[in-house]
Amino acid sequence: MTPEPESDDDDQDWKPPAKPARPFLIAVAAASFVGAAFAAESTSDFIQHLDRQVHSIHCSFIPGAGQELGDSGCRTVMMSPYSSFFRESLWGGLPVSLWALAVFAFLTYRAGLLAWRGSASRAEATFLFAATGLPLGMSVIYGYLAVAQIGATCKVCVGIYGASAVAFGAAFLAQRRVPQPVGQAPDRSKFPLWFAEGVAFVAALTVVFLLFKPPSSSGKGNDGCGTLVRADDPSAIMLELSDHGRVPAIEVLDPLCPSCRAFDTRLGASALSDELALKGVLFPLDSSCNWMVTEALHPGACAVSEAILCASGLGPTRDMAFARKVLHWAFLHQDELRSQAKEDEKALRQRLEREFPDIKGCLGGYPVKNKLTKSLRWAVSNAVPVLTPQLFVHDRRMCDEDTDLGLEYTLRRMLSRKGPDSKEASR
Image (cartoon, rainbow, N blue to C red; front, side, top):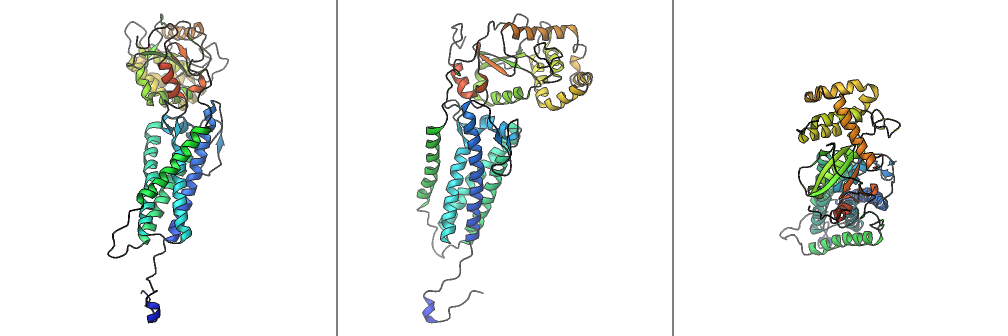
């Protein structure tokens, strides 16, 4: 029961006790602070990689822990085209984690201010609840992209998703705990001012990032890192990786190379890929067929490359759709294919024939082995470095350090250049 005033003197000062919203405001501030810590960690990793060097990356549910140098879900997500905006005009782009940091910092400030004051009006609590919906909505979108498009999970990102959900739930409970005065409409007159404060947080961090980020060009990225001696294909060893686009481009790839799979995902997600008439040259880093490597860096790559060439057709009739199907299947099953080849390559070849019966009788035969040898000799005649993936646009080789965060930025500038033979890009 609500206690009654004890005397007439207390009647004017007495008010019904407010529901305790302060604990939930503290929870919003705490969750937002954790979200800001994860976002700051992700932004720091992103900025480090803007110098075109290889760095370790944090990938842990604990902020500041789990620093790794090799492949990880966090690295895959960071290198994906969804990790930043404006990639074509800014090397690496503007990281989405930077704006997440700004939003969480703003939420920490707003919730912390109300918690320190010990109370909040209905309008303040309603605005805070609405504001926490922004990171929650973005978490849903980016969680979907990670699963459906990227195929990798980032622990730091999951930490941000969790912080967003907790902040949203706590803000909802805080808003429910603040009573609305009877007979009065909610006062939303200060909503534009509070919204402008949030925009100011985002704008300030964006300006700081643009002023102090590493330089966007190494001086050679736009010109490429070498050119092809001869881009023609007299032995018909190239695969048509795309059937659209006008700008000639060649990708040197290994079907069991994890970096090639990641590059294929990044390039495919880029809108610029539609401008490329992309062809592929198989370059398996497997010593069983490639005399340029001393060990099988990717066991089974020779067998899978033969399967792709068999699918494409060795005669005048070519089936590039079938070849792309085998290549994409190999990308999806890289880990198990490499493991199986390391134990028993014969079993791998039998698996390929079971999976794609139409290549039976071709796989392992002299014609396909000869075709694969010609593919390797094409690389030799063009002095192609022994690594994958490599991308040539207008016969110019994209620098290795520009194939991840700087892909869209560098590719846009390479597309706008003329080839070394001075032909126009549209020819």
